[in-house]
Image (cartoon, rainbow, N blue to C red):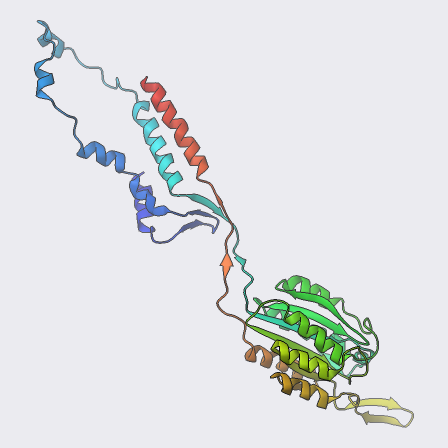
Length: 344
């Protein structure tokens, strides 16, 4: 008992964890453990002389004094049961609890909507990953995975657009689900054309649907606005009214070697990229425009955006807990009843 008491005195200013799971929420209560012993030492039994003078006297008292007393006549249980009962009561007062793994609390950090172009032109193989040629969309999906992973603590959502725009994944801090959904995106699933204005408006609406410190849209496209029910000007106006900052990224290399009847020739696969519109969207909403001609370019762009919109560092967590005080309390009551019964 003494070692138990000393241990908790040493750590009374912080919680004590066993494998980060078991904890005494009020360990300071351990100072009460020696209280019965202190009371017994300090408060001596009352010696009332009046009672002593009124004691019964017998003529054979001297002979009674000479009778040897039997040692151990008082059962050890007389002291053991109340000690155990007191120990259980003190442990219950220390509030033992079983703690679960910390769970992050959704905070008002940032809302980030990624608007990804999935039109037919995103099938162009003018990028490479690990030395192998890949389509623009495959490259975009791979690097978008890295960006999503880096945004732990923010709410991230996905809008895909082709001839029409769709909310593919609403705002959520659930990174695992976002990565699974991103891996399933395919070229042309929203049509073959490019509805930039509609994608901008839809991403803006969803970014502003949840309270946040800042609302951001990252719109990536390799074409020009030639479809959709919302024009680009209306999309910009909506973003400005909602206080949404838009970063735009033009995707596509500026030169590519292809084989034709006359041999190898160099062509520009990004002739359809409307950089002026993407720049205007970014400038009028307080964002920036970036040009991604290579895989390295896009990787660096994501890095720059991470620096411009840093992740909230002061994360808040809650730790689920289950109170266990009722077990030692119940045990203490049982031992107390045993003590009372033995003394009757």
